[in-house]
Image 1 (tube, rainbow, N blue to C red):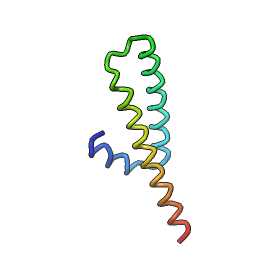
Image 2 (tube, one colour):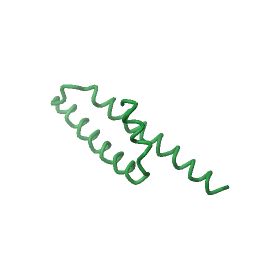
Image 3 (cartoon, rainbow, N blue to C red):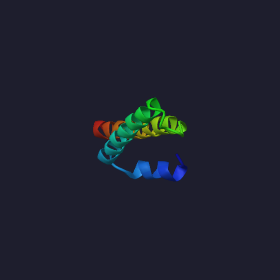
Length: 73
């Protein structure tokens, strides 16, 4: 994921990020299915998709923590 894409993810709200994670998880299931049927030619898409999901979940967690800290103050 490029730096510009990461910055755009930080600007999105939690609902948009959750929606994007669910879409990526569905895509990951489809990629796994294609791989099991030997239809997937570029197997690196699996690891890239997992990496994108992890990065988005990390951003979501950081936002949740910052929101909870703001509520405590």
